[in-house]
Image 1 (spheres, rainbow, N blue to C red):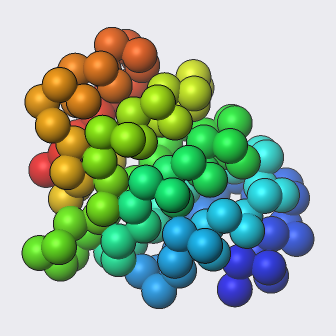
Image 2 (cartoon, helix red, strand yellow):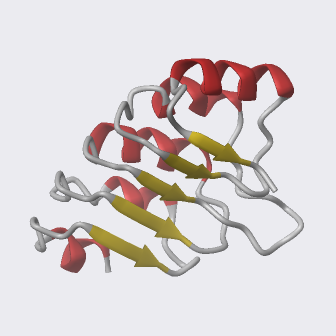
Image 3 (cartoon, rainbow, N blue to C red):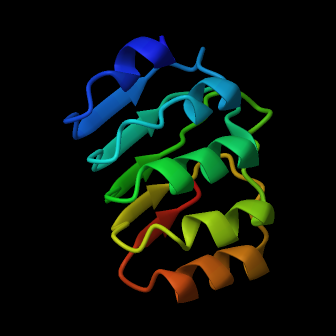
Length: 118
C-alpha cells in the first residue's frame, strides 16, 4: 500500500488504516507536500514518528490515534523527531506513552501546536 500511495507526490491529506506498520510509514518518502496525516489505530511507535518527521516537512496536522489498550507506541524518544515538524499545528497522540516531562518538552519545542494525548 505504501508504495502505491508514495507515487502521489502532490498529496496533501492522507488517512491510513491501522494495518500499516512503522516500516510501511518509512516507505512514504515521496509525500513532501503532505499537510495532514491520520494513522488510525495500530501501534506505529517511535520509528514511524521518526519516518514521518524525516519525510513530511510540510505537516500541519498529525493524528496517531489508537483504539486498543496497548497504546500507539509513541514515547519520549519521539519528541526530538516531532520537534522537527515546525509547521505542525495539531498533534493527536492518544494512547501515547509520553511522560509529563516529554509532553512539556514537546510543547516547548512547538509552542504553536496543540498536543493532545487523550
